[in-house]
Length: 113
Image (tube, rainbow, N blue to C red):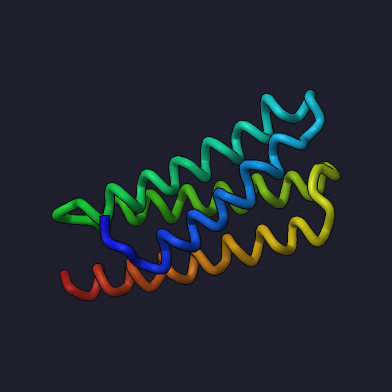
């Protein structure tokens, strides 16, 4: 696996997100917390797979969709009162950083076609 800032930032996102979601009330833990966790872990898997793929663009585009889902679930968590504003703000910043890195990667790969 290539060591790139996107992997470090994704790790930072997961390292923040997983402990926050286990604090969700029980009735939200099995729906929204699980969706956030599953989606964030899927994103990490997709970028790892892309880094090892001969043709990474399809996996990177899938990762972009997954990141959009993660943004939506994060916002929903805030709207449901499961994350405080400062927590949501921090998580959104992390997701935005990862998104910019992903966009740059997609652009660099797409330009090589």
